[in-house]
Image (cartoon, rainbow, N blue to C red; front, side, top):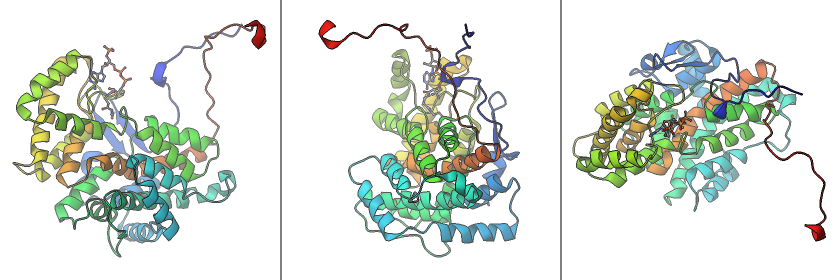
Length: 382
Ligand SMILES: CC(C)(COP(=O)(O)OP(=O)(O)OC[C@H]1O[C@@H](n2cnc3c(N)ncnc32)[C@H](O)[C@@H]1OP(=O)(O)O)[C@@H](O)C(=O)NCCC(=O)NCCS
């Protein structure tokens, strides 16, 4: 008889890949991309395009490479009229994450066998990173009944996103904040649920569009990317910062899982949330709704840390990110689509790594706990 393997629910502690892209150090509370800390990468000059180059190349881009990336983004983000129309149709009456998932799938080619085209894995991946951002903008305009106004010449990815999603001309500060948010969410090791999904789908030789749309589905859940939306909805529900302490205590008594709190790997405060708080201090203006929500988030941090800190539960990236998105005018339904626009970079670089490491199809096993073989009974005898 075969020995029963040990079962690890949620694959906790089970390595699923060898990766050189990013490193999450749960005890130290550190996140690095190709060895560079996210604190350094989100400095005043950091852009999403720079981080895409770093994730792919393994090195920080020089000026010539940066210019190349800007040209690439401008060229590759173009969509056909049909693709724009389809995305606009998908945006009506459904959550933008579902619209985005279907719009990305419709970018796929007429044939379907990526193995024959694997030498284009970088090209196709980078093209999708540029296009997914554009699609988020298209969906936001359609969801609010605005007409299509696409990317402009010379516009950075972050500026395009803030402008298309909010419908307003962004300030320099808003663009810088968006760049930082995109950088912070671009990758988080191969083991997070959506990147693992991307690797599983890539392992079946699927096309990049199938990989990204599957990963968007995984990201949409409230236990993963959807938590940024969930935390702001909770703060809206609490409404008044004065009520926050009592409300959170009550929710914790009821065993409610606070969105934006807790993490499988981090057992200290998520380093991304510290960077986001730096942005919050810069961009959230006193007397605004975002300021009230941020105040509530700080109370949630205090109350929940007092109650759960000794169990290794602390704020994650999503406790404060919603307040910052809100401060720059992003509608709540678009927090997670913007996360997807950013994480497409991580998914695509992981897809490349998956192929370069030999791309063995994922086929783990189960532990069968069902009935032993038995005789079939015809319907009259049941
Ligand atoms: C992130 C998350 C999915 C990790 O899940 P996990 O590693 O499987 O941990 P579990 O859900 O098993 O939680 C372990 C314990 O901590 C508690 N816990 C975990 N997250 C909690 C939260 N946000 N609020 C309150 N309690 C929490 C659980 O209730 C559980 O308690 P129990 O042992 O008494 O049953 C989980 O912490 C969560 O759901 N957080 C909220 C959603 C979120 O912010 N997601 C974004 C992550 S970046």
